[in-house]
Length: 344
Image (cartoon, rainbow, N blue to C red; front, side, top):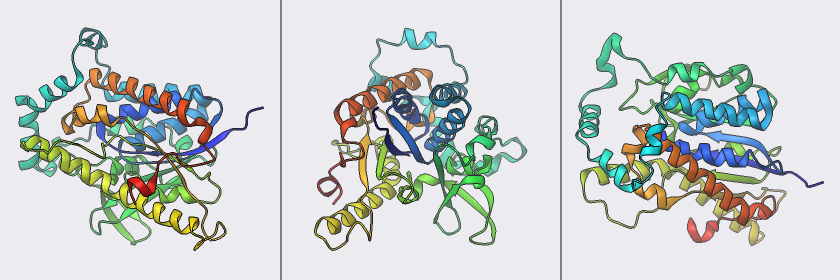
């Protein structure tokens, strides 16, 4: 009998690009040899993580896949899938640039910069509310199944808050996905500060947070599903390119800090300064498609077109397939990301 490969998942936020994560999860859930023990998610990663856990408790792996399918059908608003068939021959990069430079997106982007989400008065409505409210929180917060951690940012202090167990509510997930130029801050009682705190998107302080996955009862392996490209070779020169790269850098910064810390601790373990009794090693893996993500932009994060959603899901499945073919044997044995070379 094959021994299960126990892993933790670290799910980045990135708006509609979270459909790439959907594809990765869909493929991983097909593999009976892999057990998901812990999940840390931010923004779109928080929605994916909550949907996976609730679905898994309801119906195992197939239940998790079905619940993720339901989630993304809600995000796209049940758009006509015939559009995807019609657009199959189009280059995804050109399609992304068409949206990025379209008058409609330019107007929406300008509007978000000059009009506060607090300006709408009684007409304001967070479009994610009906989706998140439909989650079965009895299962999302259950003691069984993968440990789930959701990250959000305290507006007042700029510090991270990690929600887990019964603290994961509709508001906690909405807070994790609260882009401040688009949504009003989500206010939640905070036992640490003893006051009602407003929260913004967790991507500013933990995209996603890795440290909750260091618990002793969880496996050493953390599989990061990265949807914000770490590198772009070309210099951003247009206003859209500059804003897009600022978005990517800011939403990768917290992850890079944690990876550098892990790399530092690993060097101390390697040279004997620390022992496994002092600090258990962390085995880091990453599933990404930076080539595809370099073709996309903040515009395709904010516009949940079914064309891009389906393309991203397919790309996520392919990336997971490639990762499993190359590195499944390495899980629970060694890192497949060279932290010292990449982040040291």
